[in-house]
Length: 314
Image (cartoon, rainbow, N blue to C red):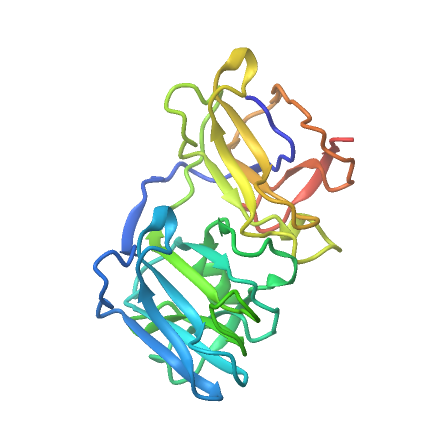
């Protein structure tokens, strides 16, 4: 294993399960039209003039995307984009998307909300704290666990589940004066049960150049206490070529722009039931990493619900 800066292990005493990704919904907005699953809300609260629309040439690689903000500077307006899903009987559901913070000022209303009554009521399950993000830069969060966020909000995955992207501010997408907004692309909802590898396990990342099914890019906040709001869409976690030992593939954890303190985590899922005398070894390259007590190896024996620090990478 190579080129690891901040590393989190999830060692779980669970049986092997299928780790295949099953797409429930995907939209890159290239059709230029809203699919039947979407309900855009240009005005939820505040002054009229909200803007939630598909725009060409502004997405990833100059493709289509969604603008959420205002048509012109004015009063504060709350906009929303609802994704309606039938999640009855589903589990291990995840959400991923690309997001660009168009100089959005942070407000507590900026976030992801969920509903299990068809949108009659919503609960905010995640706050999009743009205050410390790089402006006007595309990024993506680690996948959000819909199961966990819904459970924390006492919501049930059912046939009238709604995920809402919400934005709140008072300016438009004209960069000549004041500007605010979210730009969203490539919304993906899928199921992916964790796959726990048996021993012996090894990975040099060279075979495919992508993360295997036993790995999971994860939100780092639960191992960063008491520091919060450190998982950002500007984090960069993945396999890169030419950076491993001998110029091969390596696993990189860091960020792709400078927006203050942030954290990244990668989990390795292992089935250690009945095992003993288990050892871990890996190659690591410190790319000018400053020392923080949270740079460490953690372990979990409950599938990643709780972690314990076992070694600090000082």
